[in-house]
Length: 171
Image (cartoon, rainbow, N blue to C red; front, side):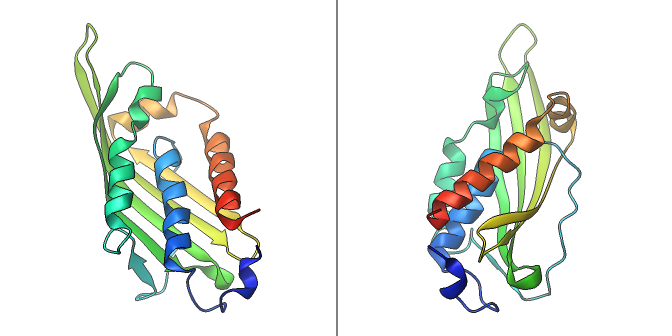
């Protein structure tokens, strides 16, 4: 399905497709390092998915996710809470998705510990081509240091997100 002809270049995607696109970014990409430098969107050109009718489903999906179990030295999540998930008009008629989350991972091993951090993610999608044109991720705090010790995840994350977006677009 070619989305270019389903929407004017000045508008956002239909709400359901947009919620799916945003969810494809936040959930699988959450534990990945990179300096976050989200692109700037014009004031007033964003809307919150968390405050939309899709908010409860997004929150449920986030609550079921456990990004910590893939990290070395921790057993499970203590907290993974998306504080904001916004969809904005992006450059060249695209769409930008920005997310901010707090996370904490726990270990119940010999050394019982909790490590915390914050996630900032920004992704720009060319809606007509159904293609990621820009992606920035950043995790700060002790958990960011742990995650940065795991290499090669940036490419994996971008590939996974692109596959999900292609699936949503019917490609």
